[in-house]
Length: 171
Image (cartoon, rainbow, N blue to C red):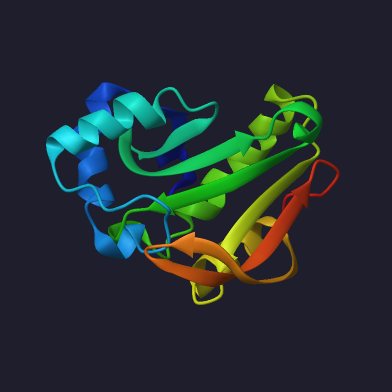
């Protein structure tokens, strides 16, 4: 994949059709906390009420078409030193290094945009080996297993916790 074709930018309402293509795929949303989007109206509501107002959610674009997202959600108050990272990309783009590149770009931006931020955290289900590989390729450190930690799609699941510090080097 030519990296010049990949970019991150804030969501726009005009992304709804592209968003629906990947957000309506159960394979993509399998490990996400939100459910598969099933209609254009639902997609419009999600982009307008969730994605756009989010503190730092960017669409991953291929040739300026939304193919996924990266979200970094800083905590508040005394916990503003850390933020949670999540991401997804359309199944047609799996295995092409797009998410790895997008997370590298996101990391370089968020530590500048949020000066109090010291630590990024990502929770990944034990079964989601592809996501674990993405984080490890970027330079995240697997810190441990959190047993019966995350509720997703009706189940409480075991999760690995990964971290990336502002002093860590992007690989």
